[in-house]
Length: 421
Length: 138
Figure (cartoon, chains in turn green, orange):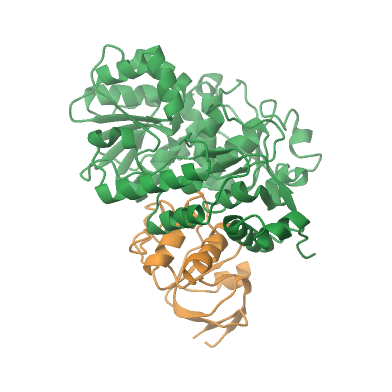
């Protein structure tokens, strides 16, 4: 069936809503044909990952849209940018990069986007609602919106999210449609203790394992004996969307479209049923670490961006302690969370500890850390997955507590007993 | 030699060049250096190989939404693959080529082929992609 366009869609393409809307809609229409969509549909919010500066092309794209008069039609939050303008003096960002990244930030602001500058938009005041049709970029946020909130978004790539925001239109395909949200593969947790299930590190590892194994299917996980926190589910999303292309998962009894196995699979049979035992979990955990070095040059927290709850957890661990002088300790978060954390005194505790804070971006999306960094330690599967390629570092994975102890000692120390079940 | 594979155009076009292939999916963000064309995902079998100006074959992309931006920038600076072949239609790659067309009039061909045909391709072969979307192994 060929793509059917509404009068509004045709008017956009004809340029009746201005040249920017014409450009956005013509890209959207070509993509709708690639998706083999039959119809276009409305969205009521967007999250723009195109805010990331990846070179002149992304800047030229943003500035061309602005020059053509682009304005977003729906509330559109912004993902991280390429520079922490407020922290330039603390970091070694090349000035050309900083200037161009900032121009790109201004361009998206000029289109009327909301200056959230975060990869965890679901932890801001602009969190979408259950059932809401949205167009989100940022892989971890896509997984979170679909799985944890039950909002509906396809996996939107950079550059297309802004076209959706400008036109308010997307192809009616994929995870926007109920029938495509059913699970494909059933995973049952087997002999994984409640104690481990309560540990944040378990979720980074489980996410990485699922990403590696289901790639882009919808996994359904059964057998939880605890109720994971939102930050734990966030860690699962980040791992699954880095090591794989998970845009949605279900957890029986936990996520909103999976009160029962029946519901998660929409009455169909799973294509496959598998067990996840401690063997799979330990192997996945070991794969996240690539180094045998014992000196952490940098310890990075906050991918996805740290939440206020995570600051609350970190605070007593670093209070009255001092970071080792040879180790950089950095937390990335949004402006909104920084302001909240500041009111609680958490930012002061971080400063007293000798730690650094960065907002609007992170160490993967801005060339801010010194070039001689060899070993990075983190509790994030996303940092662990991407740092070797993007920063050229080796990686050690550990739970939050391990990261803090290692920062104090200047030596990588991980508590392996948590994996002994 | 001279074997013909029928491709299905996602973004049609012609290309000829050396093949770089892996059966492992790839995220271009964190996996592809847009200024050198090097595969930089250190956990990927093609790590260290240069894909610039070659025909790249991977099953599909994974990971970051930023894959599109990386491919676009590499097209702009001339360090992109000349064509990309996948087994599964990949929307991220398609979009990069569409925007490269829109911005710079430089789309690159993106084709899908069957898994069976994919398995018969080998690193280092020279491929010619014709406008009829057939792929000839030279």
